[in-house]
Length: 303
Image (tube, rainbow, N blue to C red):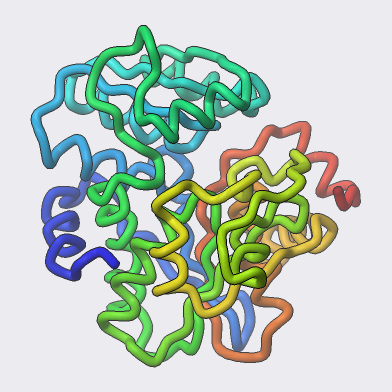
C-alpha cells in the first residue's frame, strides 16, 4: 500500500499541471472517471510527472507500450530533459508517433526484451533515470491522486473498477480509496485473453498464462511483475477477466451513450461494471486508440 501522505505529496507536486478529471454519469448506477481527458490522453501523466519532479533528473528511460511512454516524454519535455522509450515492436503506431511528436526517442525491441527491461529496470545503451511504468512507488503515488479525487467528488460508491495492466494504477487508487473509504471494494478488469491477475488470485499464487495479444493493448499480460502479487493480494477484492467481445461492446457504449472515446483498456472497467449490480465508479484510463481499430469496433467487430 502507498501511504496517504505520499499520495497527498504527489498531488502537491503535480499542482495544476494535470487535469482534475471529471466524474460523469453513465447510468443511475455507474459513474465514469475520465482519465482519457488528460493532456496525453491517459492517466499515465500523473505517475510519470510525480516521479520526475520528486528527484533530480537529467535523462530518463522507460519501458512502455505507449501511454507511459507518452507520459514520460511529456514530462521530459516539461522539465527540459531527454527521454528514451523502450517499446515492444507490436506497440500501436499511433502511440509511438505521439511519443516522437513529444520529442521522445523510441527504441523498438521484441516483446521479450521489452519485458526484460521492465524486470531489470534498465536497457543496455539507454542511460538515465529509469522511470518504471508500474513498480515505482512515486509513479504509484501519482496514480493514487485519482483515488483522492474520487473520494472528494463522490459522497458514496460501493466499488471502484480499475483496468489492470501491471498493477500500478490499481495500487495507487486502491491505497487512497481503502484509506479514505474502508468499506469500498476494489475490482480489477483484464482482457480474458491476457488475465494473469485473475488466474493468480484463483490459484492463490502467481502463475503465468497463455497470452494472446488483442486490441486491448494497454492492459493484461503474460504474467505479474515480481513485486505486484503481494500488493494485489492486499488491495484487490476481486479480479475479473472480461471477454474481448464485451470490451468491444463497452467501447461502443462509451462512444454512443457517453460520447467518450476510449481505447480497449479504457473500456475494460465499464465492461466489468456492466456485470455487476452495485454502485460502481469506472476508471476510463485512456483514449489513445488507433483510428482504424476504433472504426472496426464501432462498425461491429467484437475481437
